[in-house]
Length: 389
Image 1 (spheres, rainbow, N blue to C red):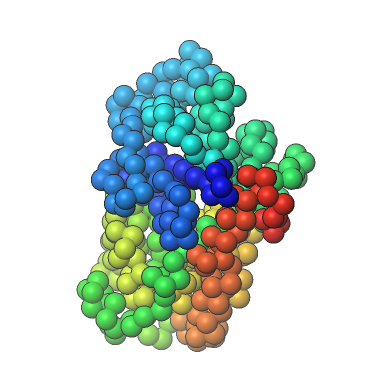
Image 2: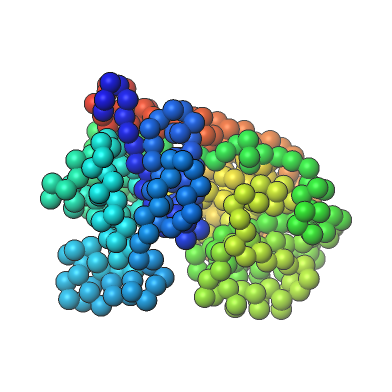
């Protein structure tokens, strides 16, 4: 740190070729820090650079044939070098390039990617890295892994509790969630939004966003429950799924055609800049995942004023608050029941909409979360300013 100013690197090897919440976090945080005048660099894993503070570090992508060498090396001790999987090969090839840049006076490197954090931690122990590593535990990293890092922020209170139930909490661990741009993700005109997407304007729309698979986002469960909703709702209902493709997507599409036919629209790989308009087109949002570190799509939907329905898991319950309901989605019929109650007006969608927006503004806004991040950086660099946890 020089003259009270510090230099921060936000690093994500997947940014530019992988569409997940983790990559969106890196891009959003770098932009927010830049707006506050922080000397920040966003290190992408693929191009093109979008901003003057971006640096692209081409790497061996986890989906490439070369990355498969990680599976082979894992059986001959490659894991000791951080080369035990496709993702770790990507992180290693990216990390080697990143180290050269981090020697240029950086004070902090901030990551959420576990394999990259591990690579950087090993480099630091070898004397190849001097700056502090801040690890955002956005994945379900085990306690022994998290314990390697003195500076960790968890994305939810439950995320911290899962770790501290097994090991003592370190002084510089805290809870700071990801944020959403509440100006971009805001309520808007439903009619205009539906016209933009070619969605019907004479019915209720239920939206689910996430990878189009059967086991993580459980879009098959969403379709099966949706198929039983129409019979119990007075108005016509249309269902929309938007998300990235997956090897199971074909099966999900087939199930959708069989059970819902023209009442289902599936949109693949929607650009994130278009998502606010899609949220505005809907009347209610559903996330069927059995667990999440922090469901960004859920927060985005709530920021746009959508009542939210999630699974009865502590993180979802914490995020949703009074902005919707959580039900046991491991049980058949539970989602169908709560959707019918909302769509028939048994529960007030208007009240839940207001509470959803209020919840995001108070807990997940860019202003509040970025301020917490800045306080955490102060603490990492030796200030007495606590991060509030």
